[in-house]
Image 1 (cartoon, rainbow, N blue to C red):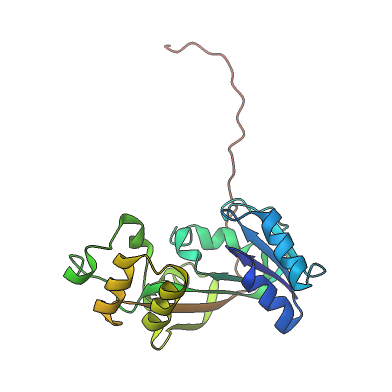
Image 2 (image 1 turned 120 degrees about the vertical axis):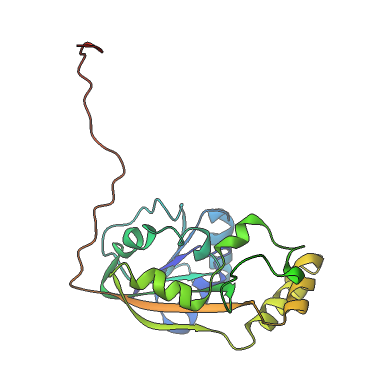
Amino acid sequence: MRVLDLGCGRAASSIFLRREFGLQVWATDLWFSVSENIQRIRDAGFEDGVFPIHADARSLPFATEFFDAVVSIDSYCYYGTDDLYLNYLARFVKPEGQIGIAGAGLVQEIEGPIPEHLRRCWTPELSSLHSAAWWRRHWERTGIMDIDIADTMPDGWQRWLEWHQLIAPDNELEISALEADRGSFLGYVRLVGRRRGQTDLADHIMSVPAQYTKKPLLR
């Protein structure tokens, strides 16, 4: 299988997929160095099956229907809330191919003001966090995907907290918010779907061809 690991970061997830399942993985990220990732992949012994790519999720350098599946761990919320993005991404997956995302999210949508215990840590970009139910609706209404799974990880907030304590122990604001919230709003969500084979995807318009013809401005 050919798999796109979208927003792979330091390519750990890509190495895992190659090691555990023998997949060919295109480790694609915008923020992290491909030169460091290829060294990390070589050191792990998987240069034959994990290929680092530097690319923006909105401008992917792949052929139509090239992949059997797409996975995205802790990055999809940065671009996937765009109403048109799934139509763009799905073209890179074969009909009946899977797209799966997982990442920080909400247990329930926040209706109204931000809860008091979250206000200190809440920044504008956190508005991209949503619940599994929200993501299900977001995908289903496109008509592109059949949803297999949309759920919230049990005790996901604790895994999120443990990650911070290990990786970013100085992030007191987010750590204290997770401890105060205790899974009321903050959690970890998962969504997996299959591209419908009979669905036609809308053309992805990159530019509109036009030719200038000189004419009088006023007639």
